[in-house]
Image (cartoon, rainbow over all chains, first blue to last red; front, side, top):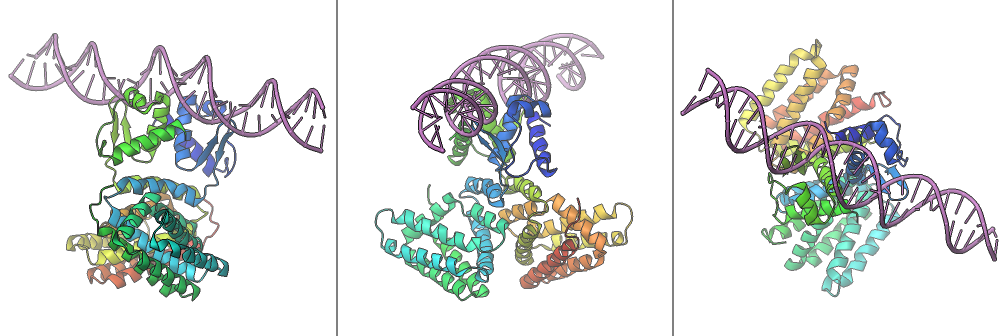
Length: 232
Length: 232
DNA sequence: GCGCAAGAATCATCCGACCACTGGTGTCCC
DNA sequence: GGGACACCAGTGGTCGGATGATTCTTGCGC
């Protein structure tokens, strides 16, 4: 067991024991290093690791704090994992994303607010001008897509689900997706699918929302497999 | 962007570009530090972080290697996250686990081999003597439960799904679960549910397997909520 | 009361040194 | 010749100190 592991476990226990709560500040490096019986260098390695895991947050000139411990934030490193496998398990990642997002749509159908429904509608209408192309059209459409799916996920009432969906639909994953969609010229179809999802949500129909979402993501996956060996 | 982030991204790119493959060895610290333009200390912080994320693996006196990059291994840190939230999001975690395991059962129903089917059956029969109690009964039942669910997950054909289920059903999560099951005296019911899942799998009936699994996990969740404020 | 500058506190980074462990190599003994 | 052992070079592990960058606080002057 290395010193750094001592640090990680030590801080982990301090959090689990309640000695450290979300947002709370850690002792200064020198002091904490002495408490845990390690040098400042080793302490920093541990703190850095927890920082990358989204548990701690250090601010130069200020101090080190425990994060809010939001699930979404803690699940963020998972996106890294997904990216790392890039081509390899793309099919498996998408299959899982389809399952999770379908469930999200089902849950959101009975929970979404009129306000968010209107926001989503505005989003989709704002996408229409870009369907024909133009400067930054690609980038804009992707942003809108991300925002649309995020609105749905946010109304599931399950933060863990939200975090996982975010991790599974990382930016690099979406980049690949949209490149394929554009190259295959199915942007209009994708837009129609979004609208179908929206209508199901407006109707507060869980099953319809689930099916529409599943259908949408299946279509997207199909486009992706059109270029199975697309270079990066 | 900190130096450590440079290191993490640098190594990540080396892997994505194919400069580094699974199992391959990294340059020595001093050299790699010069390549990335950082000090050895900063390099170590980055390497340590990737090590905790399951991407790298360092062996003193030998060198630093890229891991197999197995999904299960990379998703392991997620268990840490789940543990960290312990009580907080237990409901949400279980809801998600139910969704994933149900899907796993559905997939496994059409893929499971006769051999694994027999293994699962033997497992369940081996559990029966412990239903009445006895030394280590609690521990043994939990082991069997884990093994049973693992057999199912392993036949989904989706490594990402397997990894996520593992992460969601961490050991501490299961500890709590089984403690509740025992205290509520529903071990027999749980066993019957396992048998029902097994029968559905043997019948190669995906929908039945999915429903049986969902029913099983719903029952388990119900037992958990019986002691909503159970101390640790 | 307000703005600003000086200072303290804190993390960020680097450097050099030494320790601990591993793997390989060569030697010695049987 | 074969095997056990000792040695050695290479590598990560840890440490302490020094300097820079950033933030927050304090107190001064207006």
